[in-house]
Image 1 (cartoon, rainbow, N blue to C red):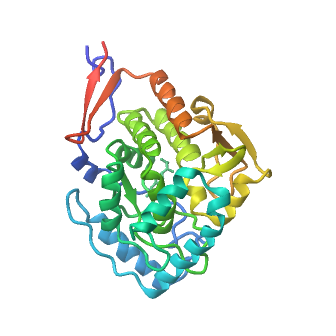
Image 2 (cartoon, rainbow, N blue to C red):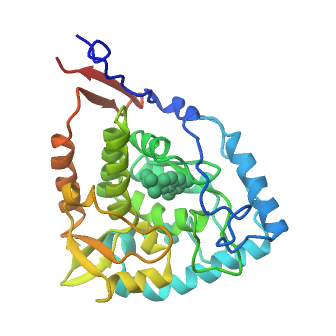
Image 3 (cartoon, rainbow, N blue to C red):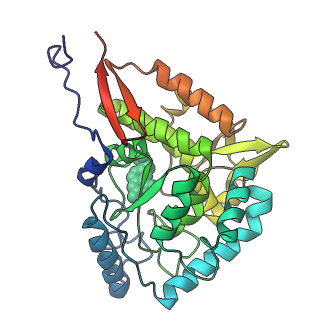
Amino acid sequence: MTSMDRGEEIPWFPRRVSELDRCSKCVTKYEPTNDPRHPGHGDTAYIMRRQFLNDQAINYRHGDPISFVEYTEEEHATWTMVFEKLKTLHESHTCLAYRQNLRMLEEAGVLTANRIPQVADVNKYLMEKTGFILRPCSGLLSARDFLASLAFRVFQTTTYLRHHESPHHSPEPDLIHELLGHVPMFADPFIAQMSQDIGLMSLGATNDQIEKLATVYWFIIEFGLCREDGQLKAIGAGLLSAYGELMHACSDVPDHKEFDPQIVSVQTYEDSGYQPLYFVAQSLQDALVKLREYAASMPRSFAIIYDPLTKSVQLVEKD
Ligand code: H4B
């Protein structure tokens, strides 16, 4: 008996990496075009630049070479300002994996404070480390589409920058967040695997399961902490790329709870200000083990098998 016979339809999901071309649905939230909370609201030149880069991204198809983007001097200056300010917190506030991978990326000349890197160069580097690749997208994606791409070790990446008048905070994902927050962590094998595991769990999942997985993703990949030598250190990209919240998260102002995906999955979160609560893993390995226990406990009528050689998945129905 198939799941269709039982009347529960499995939502469409990509079976191979090229089908991610169908997973680029954006959701509208905190856009400069219509939201006065966005620092670029009312700045026509900024809105046009963001639109130009988004139009380029939306036409991207799997396998295309990634277009070279000529960033403006103003954009490079914003990048430099953010990178240099964050550097002052790296030793004290970020986890060992981040510090090591960032150093290697700098030594390889891929991430440097003076120029915005090209996504194609980042991909060449990450491909050799963990097989993760970035593909351009045009803004905040639906959780379902965004998580599906992670199943294939693909990270959908915005290519525009935050507004220059608000360099240390962005209400939406931007290239600085992707490159300074996510890229060094995707070079780590445990974070790469954790991200892919969350992605694989999302394929064919119910809306309720997607909501839970998006919440787990939020609290570990975006805003997670770990403890090193008794001190709180950031592992989440949302913290690693935000000066103010990075200091806040590691201070004793917010609450800290032990990372447990079962509890995390139903925790409400804040997407317009600092979090009042963060989850702390013992280590990256610890977070991965707990995530796998959670995956095993997820109720599903099928299993998903991933083949890394063909970057495709197969659905196996349970009877
Ligand atoms: N879309 C883009 N472009 N970048 C992101 O980091 C995210 C996204 N994060 N969509 C997603 C949503 C998460 O917040 C979860 C999965 O909802």
